[in-house]
Amino acid sequence: MGRLPAGVLTRQVLSHPAARLPGMTGRPERYAALLRGINVGGNKKVPMAELREVMAGLGWEDVRTYVNSGNAVFTAGRRDTGELAAELEAAIAGRFGFTVPCLVRTAGELRAVVGACPYPAAGTDPARLLVLFLGREPDRGRLAAVDAAAYAPDEFRVGERELYCWFPDGMGRSRLPGALETACRGTTVTGRNWRTVTRLVEMVP
Picture 1 (cartoon, rainbow, N blue to C red):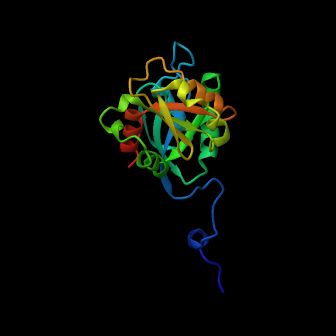
Picture 2 (cartoon, rainbow, N blue to C red; picture 1 turned 90 degrees about the vertical axis):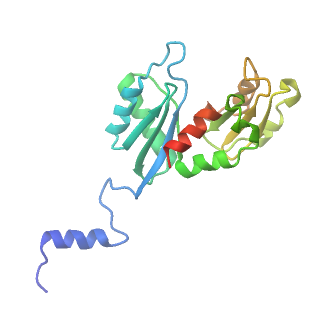
Picture 3 (cartoon, one colour; picture 1 turned 120 degrees about the vertical axis):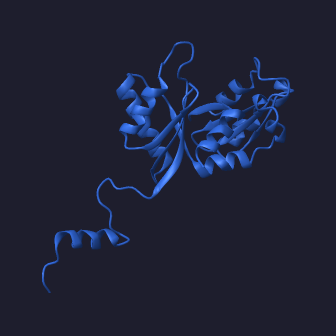
């Protein structure tokens, strides 16, 4: 059999299900990135325009940000979300010189957070609901030890890798989020109000 032209051989190899060039990822998927603790009280300043540049520099596409608290959506090849978060953390540290913990959720995971919300009233009063996103599944034993009565009327429910916090009288100076973060020590925790969560879902259709 004669030698095939190089271009034909390349197309045949790439068409094989097991073939993959170095650096090639899976089919494109939409993600949301959640950064913890930036642009608060003048600390860890990360302008959103520069954050978009950092993310585009990683090869991620269609990068969009929402408000100034570290929310972004982007398209990348199908990857483990923990790997994407670590890659973003390293890129931010390289650009700005400080560490910013990051979480990444797929579009499907973010929609599931909205679908599992145990507080229907959040639809009409989103400022009263806070979602704490976690880097891993929570330790339910530690959460069970939180004295919920001490924070009433505020309350919380446990999700997959999220905690839903409801503040019927407004978030104000509630100490509940701090208590829950303590119970989830050892993993990244970052909170978003319900308005932000639902807006991000709209941005990652």
